[in-house]
Amino acid sequence: MSEPLILTFDVGTQSVRAMLIDKTGCIRERTSHVYARPYYSLHPTWAEQRPDFYYEEMCLVSRELREKAPELFAQAVCMVMTVFRDSTVCLDEDGMPLRDCILWMDQRQAENLRPIPWLRRIMFALVGMTDTVNMLYHTSVCNWIAENEPELWAKTRQYVLLSTYLNFRFTGNIQDSWASMIAKIPFDYRHRRWDKNGLTRCLYDVPADKLCRLVPSGAELGRVTAQAAADSGIPEGLPLIATGSDKGCETIGLSVLEEDQAALSFGTSCTVQFTSRRYFEPHPFMPSYPAVPNDLYNGEIQLLRGYWMLTWFKQNFAQDEVREAARQGCSAEEILNRHLASVPPGCDGLLLLPHWTPGLYTPGARGAMIGFSDGHTKYHIYRAIIEGLNYGLMEGLYTMQRRSGQKIRHLFLGGGGSRSDEICQITADMFGLPVSRIQTNESSALGAAMCAFVSLGEFPSYQQAAGSMVRIRDTFQPRPELTAFYQRIYREVFSRYYRTVLPLHKRLIALTGRPRKSIEET
Image 1 (cartoon, rainbow, N blue to C red):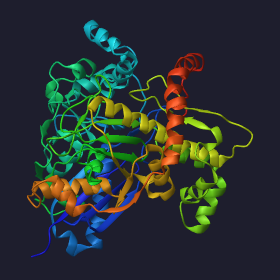
Image 2 (cartoon, one colour):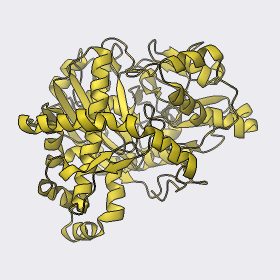
Image 3 (cartoon, rainbow, N blue to C red):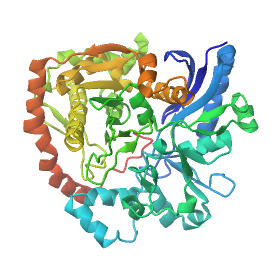
Image 4 (tube, rainbow, N blue to C red):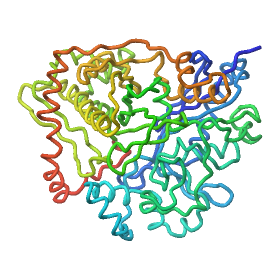
């Protein structure tokens, strides 16, 4: 009897990948496609894409995978997908999109919203969350559509996440996992259900009849329809199993299932995620998310502009390295990383504040660098970006440790930045903790496949699935003398920096406005 394989899709902002994964965590075959145009901007800071664009891209890589490995493709016992989060679609009565999908990096804002109820405003003010709540309220896509496209909003029968829409395209059912409900929507994260009269309901008052049916992770969402089979080459009737968001799948794919472990994601955005058996708020009124294992939560703090900063650096400072990389057939980051050792820890006094895009916990922030001297080079800037992102994640980790009572003793790294030995060692030194990488960079897809195998009864628990499917490839140990040095910079400078310059940032924004550069140009 042939071994069972999971047909796994990882739908990202920049690309889509299809894989066939076995019970040992081996990716038996894969295909991928980088989008020619990931999104478009009708106005500065907007980001949109056709919802069917992602379905078409999934069908493309699925057909390629079937052509590449027809015998393995036939061994798939189910399919799963993990999709980038906080991107929403308006559907009509027939499940057809009424407008293009507004993506997570979109920065449009509603302007003329009714005031938040006064009692809620007092509660938010007492814990210093007024600015954060106002940002969430005004940047919510549902509020913007209701204000600016009221006729379309009135026609909207279902307001769903992109993952929900893709589930519908493959199965004909409009439903999704509660572990995928990470967006500005009225969701009760503690109880894994739609919010009836809680904190999120006062910010995103989407009518209950516009919201989809929720199911646990591991539940069957439906079976591949005849039309989807014709489009994708996936066998008609193949079950689609519910998983969770991309970051949630990445966390279990890295085997972060215990309360003394944390997952760091070094992607376009950077995150630190905990796994917890009890619900806690990483910041007041900011939720932990339902984890893919249905009895766990993922506390998270995110830096929206994460390793995107290295793309910005390449575009503005590293044209020579980009050309050299093309000649050598490698990435520009590989060449730049070779220069990290030429810059000492602390970058000769150069320090980066990494909040280049206002985040949930830093709504008034702008990015900054301090400490420039005439001895600094572009490689100092490059290393300062990496160190600055780590300082931001350290701040997030320490905050969540205080609020959860957990003590982290081991870090697991995912995302593109984790491919660099140099970055992994810097991270171990800064956090003062061992830093591990697993056998694959496809940790989100691996986590989704783990969910399917547990659901199918191939493993009795996620711990046993991780024991079979996840292998630590290498571990970087911290160097105590460097950890002590970095900790002094963190405590004596970085942790005070944001509070010190925040009034100046707010004043500067008031005088000059926010940058109006389009997302496409970035």
